[in-house]
Amino acid sequence: MNNIAQLIDHTNLKPDASESDIIKLCEETVEHGFASACVSPVHVPLAASFLKEKKPKVCTVIGFPLGTDSAEMKFAQARFLIHQGAEELDMVLNIGALKEGNIDIIQREIGQVVNAADGNCVKVIIETCLLSTDEKVLACTLAQNSGADFVKTSTGFSSAGAIIEDVELMRETVGDGMGVKASGGIKTAADVKAMVDAGANRIGTSSSISIIHE
Image 1 (cartoon, rainbow, N blue to C red):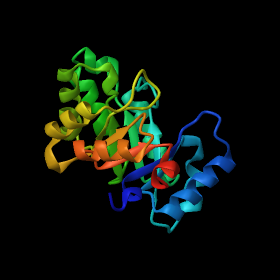
Image 2: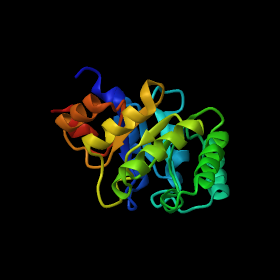
Image 3: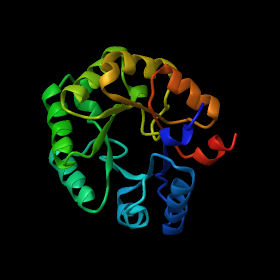
Image 4: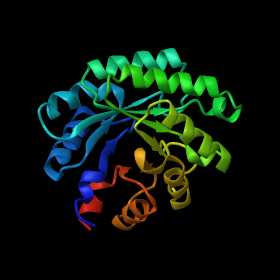
């Protein structure tokens, strides 16, 4: 698979990640041509400083990893991080509200983050391992209708990560007009190929270096 690096958000969201870890992540992101360096909110200014005027984007997370912040909090966090240099936002939707069928909350919070992003990329993490098939379809539909750019499988912090069947379902639901990001448990080049074949056009992984060296 050609240009595999261009599909990957090179990720370090570990709670014990140090500044030196983030600098290394950014160096690797530039060296190998990954799509973005995905870092925790506290590390956005450092990553933005390092990647300024370079091709890879600065990606960060909103409402991570539980999705239980209010729409107002997600908006405020998103707007603040965009001002600090974030260029892509991976937000966790309110999973409890989705499972209760509270569509208004989901539409509002996604719309708020899209608004706060000022035209930058928004990916909605639906945490597929916690949802039924109908709930996955609903989450994807709401994300698409609310103006998000991608739907994403997983935080990598819940009970399971990306699986092929979920990526296929997400792609089928959103069609060709929206991105699908597979994340969580992707550790090999074969994993990446399987996810891309299933319909993913972005991959989130912390195993990026070993994957491209295979």
